[in-house]
Structure formats: structure tokens, C-alpha cells
Picture (cartoon, rainbow, N blue to C red):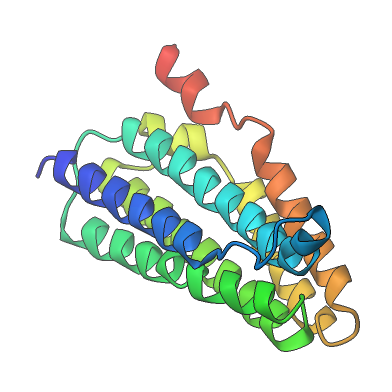
Length: 191
């Protein structure tokens, strides 16, 4: 089965997710710079979530670029990922409106954890489809970065109840880890 429809659908869903997030941001009531202060947490939560959606879009693109075809299991694994990513606008708004309080930060982390798990499942599904000796399997390797991300999310969630800002630092650290270009797939495809 061709991967084109899966790519197009995923791109569309991710575009809608970003659109929903930006539409949730309301302008301040007032014209001075001081009127921006109440919306700073909303903007910061939007910024972090925008970066995360961008990271998933970028890595999803590279992942599918390394595949030749998809099957039903791949489509369900991809929908599983998109489900968790589609919840990011809700938790983004919740964090921003509640100034990074414990429960919103913990639930945000849970959504990130589940999206990380879903991406891991998608990669394993694609590797199973293409074979353990495929270019994709070789490029993904042990997926140390993906596993570390999942562990950091799992650690951060309970930390949200100790100090929400500590959990937020973990989420930012994972994002930074993925912002550094992951050239595994690009390098293997260009060979």
C-alpha cells in the first residue's frame, strides 16, 4: 500500500493541531505592554507545544521517507500517534490558563509520554514491515534517543507534583534533545 495518503493525512492533522493551538491564544485586553503579562504563560505553553509538534512533524517526515510502503498495522500505529498528538492543544491551553500548575503539567507530561510511546510503536511497526535488515532498521538502530525521552517523561510526571517547573525543565530538555538534528535516517538514505 502506498505511503502517500498516510503522509498527507498526517500532515493535515498536524497542521490542524497547530491551528487549534494558535486559535486558543487570545489577545490581551488592553494596549500596554503590561497587559501582555497575564498571557505570558499561555504563550510559553504554546511555544513549547509548537516546538513539539514541529519535532514530531519533522521526524515523522524522515521516518516515512525511509519507508517504501505501509500496511494496516502501520496505519493504526500512525493513528495512535496522531490521537495523542491531537490532545496537545487541550493540555497546552490548560497549562497556560493555570500558569503551569501541578495537574496540568503532569497531564501534559502524560500526553508527551504517550506520544513518545506511540512514536516508538510506529517505528517498530515500520521496521517489522520492512525487515530488521532494512535501511530504516539500520537508521533507527537501538533508538536510544527515543527510549531516553520516554524515561525522562516518566520521571517528570511525578515531579510535577513536587515542583511543576522541574517537570517543565524535563519537557524542555527532551525537546532540546530532539531539536539537535537527528541525522540517522538522512545519513542512511543518502548513502
